[in-house]
Image (cartoon, rainbow, N blue to C red; front, side, top):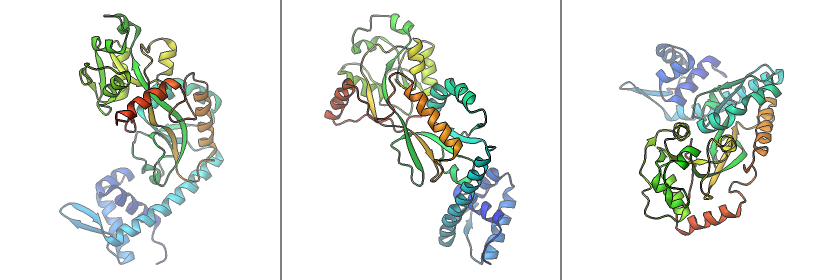
Length: 329
């Protein structure tokens, strides 16, 4: 047999990628028994066991692991060709996944402008953080924060970030004056669970001692913490670029000129060879135009070019600590 049934290969690839027949069944809208039956039929046709089955667990055999890698690559090529064909007809939605803070704070307020410019492109937002979903064919493009290092994928630079302490004008006015960075001791300091060092690094950059960097409420995500700041609960360390709209409207303010440039930034991530997909190209070009039109947003330099930032970064590095937001969301 030169080529097994494509449906069996699709089921095998999903089970191998998920490491579970049940998870593959949920992804493919099949029953677990149907997945098991198709994989057993594939093994019989190939005359090679692909999975070891024991104690309600399945693991790939050595032959199965090698075959899974080849099948995944082959299906990825087929899916890519199909997406490009659909895109050339202009009738396929652009499926994307976005970092939550980027989606809620940066993209959504501007999305109407993209839709007005490109009414022919339907956007479909996929709620996944797993970039392996590109292989399943359910995803066309992602916006992710990092250093551009996603193996097997292409990453195009979008913009740099730098963090600062922000609050509403009401919080700034409610208490002793915020004359120096040390005065944050008199305000509630909001924290994000997966960014535990933000306040410590900001206080270090500001040269402040004697202020507890851990005191204050902790929220499980950046968007929730930002909402807390916007309803006047306290101050939060946040990225100026993501909050450009709120800062421009005066809903949030920066009481101090202490910024922490990140060592990474936002990238547009997609499968190799898809950069010239007309839908992806239209979205990329529009995002870059919006970034360029936003005051104070650095699109070309991951570290930024303001002298104040360079000085602060030098202070941070001289202590042996480097601020890194690669895990932010």
